[in-house]
Image 1 (cartoon, one colour):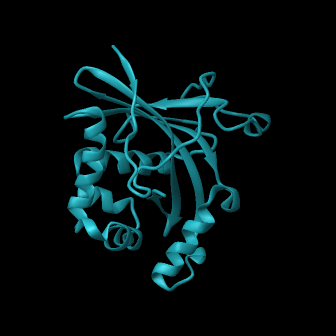
Image 2 (image 1 turned 45 degrees about the vertical axis):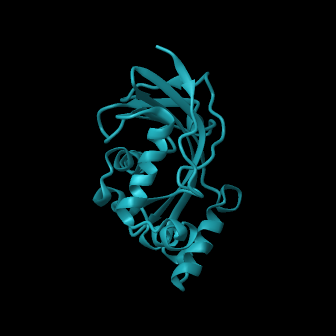
Length: 209
């Protein structure tokens, strides 16, 4: 089966740009436990595959990425793949989505569903009809607000809502992703895609930027 590199989509941020992944990652056992010294290792030294627990198969370092984070990432991209607006709204921030639709892409005259359809079409145009996201790998993790850029996202949300979003966000991180997408009997790979994840009211929300 032929492997091609594709560009998934870049809607000001709507599926973003990414940083690299290592081909030398070790896979872990789902039931394995880690000692303190292992917790000091770099992200990606131990990688966990899970193709049953989430809406899409996921691969990530479970010492850094919780099941809740992995679930939100999977649900975000599954909602795009299935054009499921209700699911999409559960893992995105309403004010940020309104900003994208009404300001960034105002000339497109999107509503919520047509904006989601545009995300779907962006992947379809690169991979083909009836595409299937076969795997999402979280290849890097940065939870430092200053180096990750999450601080700027939080400030933008504060400006959009006229409230101090830093008091609402209890966790933030930039995740680097890689995808395997199949369509028409071929597989396509995309690496170095960045998204942000913010924990608000005990729920993880996805922001593309």
